[in-house]
Amino acid sequence: MEKLLYPACFYPCEELTGFTVVVPDLPGCVSEGRSLQEAIEMGIDAASGWVLDEIEEGRPIPPSSKLEDVKADEKPGGFVNLLMLDMDAYAEKYGEKAVRKNLTIPAWLNTFAEANNINFSKVLQDAFLSIYNKQPTATTL
Image (tube, rainbow, N blue to C red; front, side, top):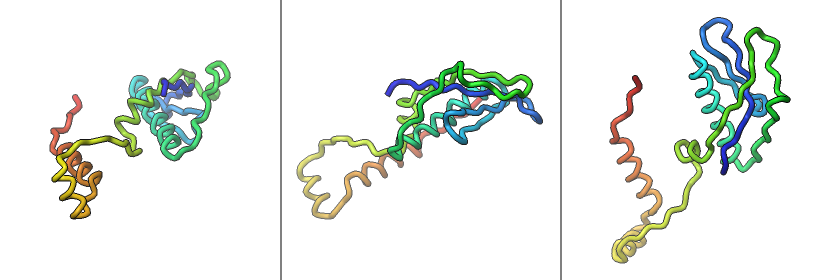
């Protein structure tokens, strides 16, 4: 899938510093950040999550409006900017959709697993989750 572009409206927050982000083509897709950079990042994350849900549910992805057709409300300081969504990278990191993988194991192990009704996918998922959960967590500075 190629990268997607959606126009987003940015508005200065009324009570706190930062910006609220609204993506008009994705109903209900709203986020905010304490700075413009964080607002852009949060807007991309929210829009990517919104689109990924549609993809995983088998629904069509809404088309993007032309940048010039989207206008920020007449709130002071509002403006429109594009958000670029890299759906392949986002789905790889956060997607729930199952991915088929081929694997090779010794014949005797296959015979044992089948005789004991062992679910290959479940065993592999559990093993990967165990390894994943033992990884040190990244800290933010």
